Image (cartoon, rainbow, N blue to C red; front, side, top):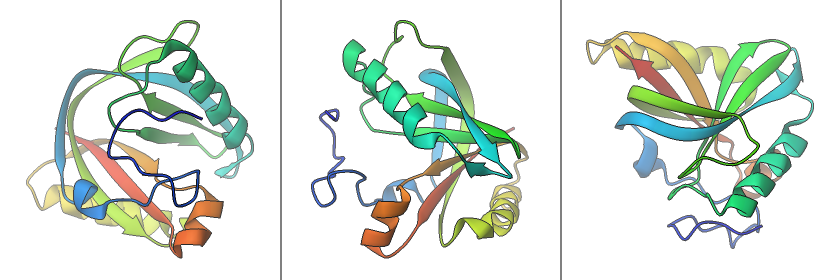
Length: 165
């Protein structure tokens, strides 16, 4: 699969790049109508059932439209135990795909560990946001590596994106 010409280096695994923690930890991003392809992942008690096929479909559409974002990013909204919405960053509208445009201020926090720690990550993100005198409006997660690559790198890393007000 072709990747955008970015600092994103996936040569080590041929799949996921190693997460640059300094790039994401404790950052604040302000977006105005940032374009994303929106899709849905079926889950059973928050365990993804079709994540790979959804990502393959979305990346095929991005490749066809040559619409890769300057920096690869996908955000997951854990909407229920039975499914999540996924937002894949793009640099323009992608034909035949559902588009969503995110706006607002987003604060980030990087976590390392197993997915079962998600509850503590949420609590730590809320504390981080409150420590900056802000209120969390919505929370997304950037699962930076697939399970195979997390095993290769020896760690699983996730970036919490808190939309704040």
